[in-house]
Length: 339
Ligand code: ADP
Ligand code: MG
Image (cartoon, protein in one colour):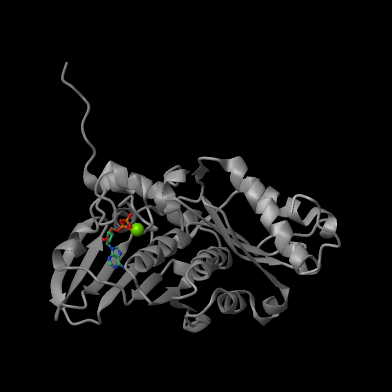
């Protein structure tokens, strides 16, 4: 009998991989804005139509790409960010898997215009379902503009599975806000169906939080700032009297990457002890910085779950530091001997 195993064609392999990386319009937004950050952009504009189902456009003034790199960027496992296995232990960029653009191109109609600052002419590329339709020189500003049209046009099950415009837009705003908070020094704006929802000038973290959460946030913020040899904690926690009945304004960033962690959330809430009224959740924006060797961010394709070498240490330091910060603002009546 003949052998029956074959390698999948690229277009199909990419479409399958896309299922993990690109679940909804917000996933594409995350990947494109992270790429712009990695490209060193100081200005990033996000334009969305129909909650991302019709159009997701990201305009950056980052480093841009050469004509060959612009084409290469869409290959699976194509990345400029790591070169060898060892590099996985020193990652400082948001991306490194080289999967996002290949995945997006497999399930959408993509147009990119990109120009390096030193080049006179840029490159325009149109790709649909992994197939390159156009590649030509073009006039364009330095940096890169990605336009993603009709996401999941060739995956009807995915497209039909998308939620209402309100829900999909909520996810997009969530991703936008996370990246905006982690990059206060970058100008960011978000436009939806012609109206500007966010306009965030580059500045300090406190200003950025006011831009994201509204001006009422200003009086709620208690600064956190402490470090040891292995760990640095910075950011803000909310005064307990402003804690809300819903979660939401709660953010952990590890080496500037937004992560979800029930464990660290527990440490943070424990720091408030009995200051929090029943059923309320404090605001927090905490940046945890440590040597990339001490964490594994490659646990999941979306990189929202990470593993710490020593989770207990982070837990304890977080709890003690936040308690200290709250105490310094005279919110805690007494400080116990741990401090
Ligand atoms: P990764 O970010 O994991 O490297 P991507 O598929 O997201 O993989 O991108 C592939 C490559 O394309 C990147 O490594 C980068 O070199 C290039 N690239 C993507 N987006 C941009 C951008 N906005 N500006 C400049 N280069 C980009
Ligand atoms: Mg990327």
